[in-house]
Length: 496
Ligand code: GLN
Image (cartoon, rainbow, N blue to C red; front, side):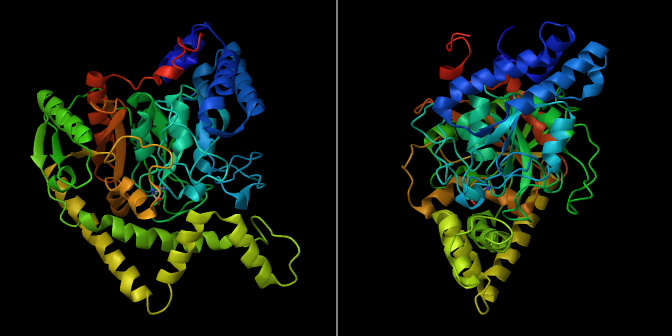
């Protein structure tokens, strides 16, 4: 069989249906690719061949019985999950020493829905520790390379999820996004990456970072594959009270084009300091292409968006501080041995179990929520949140979708950014969308003229209208093509 690495969901399923190959062959091919490519990329923290083969055998049994269609929309599709998502029987480490030995006793709803759709689970993917970061460098278990240039970061925190798709090891992966962790790595690795509106996907079983900001979404090489995965993921889950009833078909508008759509461009974004000229040039090119396809481009103002990073680095650490309090070495997490009193055990376990960025966030959150300080920072940050949410709502009175860069620059080298405050700027184009709660996605739009690395356009949609941004992304895909597997990992080069 041809390597599945160049196939989309529809072609895998067509091949299965026509009897050209079995799901077991797809699983074996995928596992062999992981074995070969991951030596260099290191996207996986755990590979689960037994689970992948068992799922494949189920799909093959359905094929034999003539009931393949009942297997679900992702039948036979190789997938993997960010390591903050529980999958029963696997380690869920959040790339932290704190959870190094934690084995999931249950499965997250998002993972279960993808498995129920017939997908083949290859394993768990590297990330920044507890999803704190923008480069996957804070993982306690080593870095992940960007398949386009292994001396560069894949972005983060879902770096493993983006790299696994870009290196052709998976057709679809899941990541989570609290301030940009799906879109920014999607941008750096040149793959489609969707952060749905808050509440579209259940967070049950996903280790919490910022509970009012976290959202799960897919990575894929085509917009349709991402939309199909959204169909599997979306909807109300009684186990997450913030999840909503969502009945839309995310693939419904993909072929409609952008003729007559109103697309917003934000001067505050396009003129921001720190926007790399090659990224700006690409986004301007995208504007022209969309206009050429019949879209109406409108300038929209987001006057408070400049305060988004400051607000996020108050709200995020406060929520993280509270969520991470459960890792107390008693019920969960690393337990430092030999302490006679509980206070000593807590202190040693938490200082040794958490890495430097996690400790920084915990200390920040603990300070920001202390009495006297709380009023000075937490309240104003919540007020800023309201203003930014209002800015977006007003913009959507004028436009159906907003276009922006996904990140201010292309992928940087390992160690290039060592200042936390500078790293925090990686998310300058994504954070305000988590604050407002609406959806955003990265759409790869080719390579930067100077760096030769992937550049991403971010499409931002009104809350619970994620089909708008997918529609624009699908139109751009007709111009820029589906995301390729990174050249060094393309099957032909690997001799397959
Ligand atoms: N990079 C941002 C942070 O470090 C966002 C992370 C995320 O979305 N999980 O907090």
